[in-house]
Length: 154
Ligand SMILES: CC(C)(COP(=O)(O)OP(=O)(O)OC[C@H]1O[C@@H](n2cnc3c(N)ncnc32)[C@H](O)[C@@H]1OP(=O)(O)O)[C@@H](O)C(=O)NCCC(=O)NCCS
Image 1 (cartoon, protein in one colour):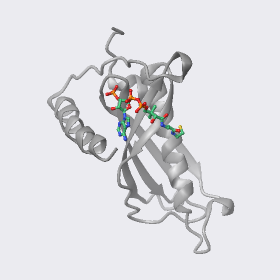
Image 2 (cartoon, helix red, strand yellow):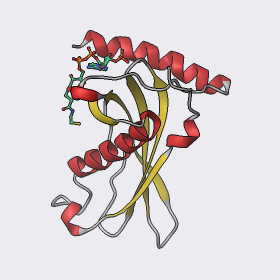
Image 3 (cartoon, helix red, strand yellow):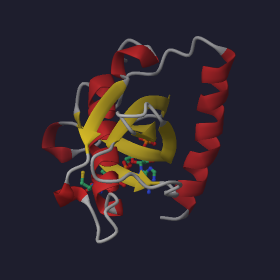
Image 4 (tube, protein in one colour):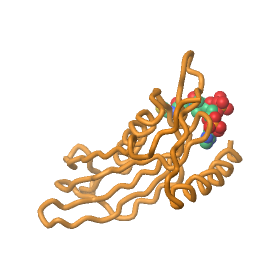
């Protein structure tokens, strides 16, 4: 089995400047664009942890809480919440930012499941996550319950 890895090595942050091509007719970021950035940020996090190319297996509910306008900034942060055998739960938080005023606001929080792919495009085991704190252990336990619900939907 591969050596366990701490969460810190795979934390992934992205910053995107919102341009007109990212916007809907209201001048706010198109939801599909946010979803694409979330998917990319989470994929990089999953690949940093596993050291493998990964595919998206499941996306939990997405709730778009507040919009981000053209000329503002979208910040994304992904961390690994839990590992299973070949899959990982990644938590992504998205924040809007106005660089002129310094204001920032929550936009989306999302959890995604990625599967690490090995030879022949088959799922392959991932390193376990080092769980240092009670909060990290609680996150792993809660993720195991969420995983059962996701698998029940297959
Ligand atoms: C995700 C995928 C690899 C799973 O393949 P599979 O034949 O079901 O393989 P397995 O049954 O061995 O499952 C592999 C892992 O995926 C997990 N998984 C599969 N479906 C899942 C779902 N709906 N939700 C959460 N986890 C899921 C399994 O629990 C398992 O994880 P584990 O080893 O940690 O327990 C396959 O369904 C696939 O390739 N889907 C398309 C992915 C894709 O194209 N994504 C978009 C572009 S990246």
